[in-house]
Length: 496
Length: 117
Image (cartoon, rainbow over all chains, first blue to last red; front, top):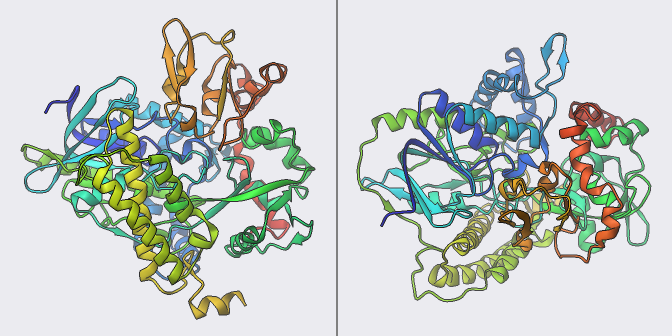
């Protein structure tokens, strides 16, 4: 079967966010002929584009200390060598951005430890990727991988969401940079983060790891997507009766907030924000005030309801198992970069939010891009076959599936504080059973064409990701890092 | 979610159609784009940021469409707010990017005991 658009390349990059652009840039700079396919628009796609990031950017003489400091609270699973590699590569690569992003200059040198605003960062990355000769295909969601007879990755196929029809790219190697999964929590910028890349990779034979570490949450106004860490540190928090909630700093903060939200609504006023912070906020974080202004609220004076939005495997750290130092998956010719890959070796069992995740995007993209070019040089030409199943080629007779209803169930099971933040065996078993039932329907009946093909595949991916997370969470009957098992005696001691 | 395309301001550049990460707009030849798939909107406001003529309005409610009073919206600077405060387009000189201040803001939060280093 031929597609409406057929291309060949050395390297195919699937995704268009931070990790995808660093991957495409590295692959092109290594001499590869590169195609990048994005579900949306490369420049606004992914969670970085809607917010901003700070990189884990440390001078080489402080690398060992930076890793030791971070891993001291990592829950024991991190690999210092892998974290050191991330620091070294980020130190080498981030200056690539100097000419394209206005880092503040201190002592005559760009200060690359400062926060980088998302829309400007991704716009700059798109420019860099474009000038490096990468062919960028916006609104070309990938649905499935193409494998050669020997089981190696030889490309991907999908639909042209705006142009119509289908596309197929044959490539010497494929890099998945499709992001983490936030289970439609309304977390800012995460709607397209549905786990498509994870499902594609698993169908091809890749493994996952650390999937239980998938339950970090970030504060936002209750009606809004505007998840933020910074400004909410200046809040006074109250319950429905106006009683002040004392919040600890650090990871325990979400535990106290989550428990309070299970009891009833929680409100805040950012009344502890210094005057200069209020004055500067519009030019520091220009989108932060948008929801408030449009509701006639002054967040520094008025009381408003808040929620915790699930970060899934975005600030959670589970994902595809990749080998150091190339970010190769278990499938020959298939690499993974950014949040689609597991980050437990880099950050341990705690959140990768803050600076490690962005440093990981830079470094894993660099490694995967270069390794994909090397792999492509030795790849043999062979016929390829598509290997997508759930949501594409149902096991039974195709039937109408209410994808909105399916996604709503996944959203509940993977976001509810009493199911995902606080976990115990009966709850996890009940969730898994619910998701297993959905999977039977999705795998057996769901398919679609055109834009519906994307919805079908996203739905299947969300259910698959949910099942993997619940399964992993059941298999770790202990509290570790962000994985809170309330049926673990150690947890009960810790919160007592 | 995206609620308004202000057709009289729109120059039909179709930038919003191109940059929307969720593909909510459909282009219309020689006319303003239409909101074709509102329920796919992720309320990221990036269409407003990219719109060169402040012709788009996103309501902050990310769950349900709301009845927006277009006359009221037109009387505000809301459609211009994100692009202006970001220092894009005409606001390049008046609103410089000061996101580097975030480290100072986090330091201020630490001073209040609300943040661990």
